[in-house]
Image (cartoon, rainbow, N blue to C red; front, side, top):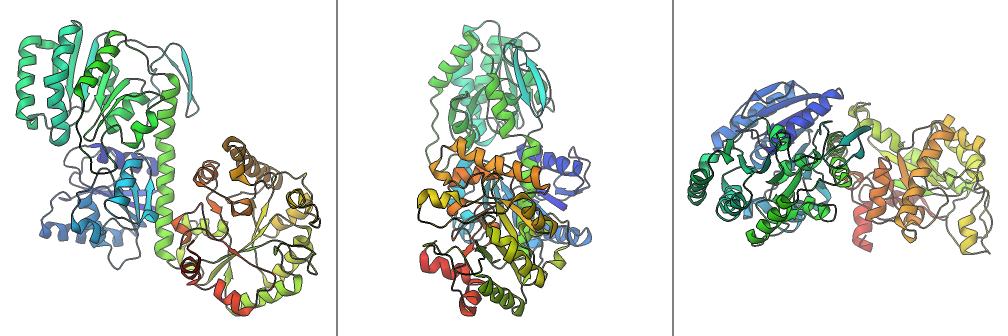
Length: 629
């Protein structure tokens, strides 16, 4: 892809570090990347264009928008990624009338005023860096939940030896042996790392007044490091407290200010106080953290409170407008207890942090967001996905309407042909989304036909009929090739007629004919009824089995019975699928939720009128209005 990042970068803050990290990760994968910001000296090999993105005067904003629009056209940009409200504003203006999507990462709470809710300049997709921020955007900014993806900042963790007693860690296929010491220079040191202006400056001032004086007095070997930008903007009370500390404790108070060697200072620090990226990098490097941000104090980060701390970006972001008072007495007690007996960061916590914020994983997820935004912009209408099962010669003696006879199915195909539909698969769709096929070739009237379970009549009746029309579909199969009939139906109702499934050779015939093979679990259970680990195993093993036996890539998963929940959707995503296909539930557009794709049930007695309705661009809205799903 050809990616343009637009960001405010008057100084190298966390948002700039995030943008640069993404740029370098995507460049390493072969994507072309450009940056537009206040600086052209950011640490990236990508081409940089300097302009005053942070300047909010309308004249400068319009100049910025014209510059971005020209760059988008000249370099044939596929997606623009903005990293601040100012960047989103000028990017939104620049892209008006173009088919290029805008993705915005929101790094912090937005100012709540009328224009924020009424004038959505954040574009086609929004990345919220933590769960609390997503809640804020939905409930307070009133942003459409469908467009928001909660995805943390990615961090490229180093391979240095980190904390804990001889703990063997396996992270990113890298074995780390870690040994704990106070710090690399053998000093007992506490450090505040962050900005010294705004809300962070108020926190720093309170620490200088209420926390650091007693700690320095109680621990004669303790050193205090103050690390971060805008130190001159520290509130007056904080400046006064700092002057007193320097007079009383001399060189034990290290006023570092802005530095490019944050990692080095983390290595020399016993206990770090900070939030956001500071907390992430410290924990990932095995260093203890008291999570203190603009919104709250999350305490000493442990395995038990990691999820809660991460949801607030380690104290920086509250989900709703709330008082931001911090109990500095409790913080002092936590710091005192830790410094009295310094403890290593548990290896399991370090692994958890590195997995959650892993740059390679986050960069891949962001790339999927780009692709999704691009497809929704290029293919804005509802894409019909129809669900079939058996294609028998005659109606079976069943209570269930999971069949369409061979003769009726032939009429369906004739109807699709007359309506000039082009049949595609999810694998085809993914090729367009990934840029492997040009969007100009995407069909004007796409249609996806899916067939669940792999019945024997699919081989005898379905495949020949589809081949007559030159059509391909998506066949959802069980990963257990030993299942040879509809055992799940008979287990629920012994009077249900037996329906045989295809053997391996017959399934291979579909692969040879160019069909997409999707996964449908190992044994067709109701997934929500299983313990999550068992359900996850059904999902993961089915993909691995089908890919191994049939030697084909499996990119989509169909939930048996259409039964799903958020945990199962996450499990399908984590298993490496690109799509999860539901039944009569899901978004208005495929890209609203790739892991709950709306699929339409096809019944035995469909006629041309019902097929016309079910394949119409307005059908999903009609169905939602009629049934509330």
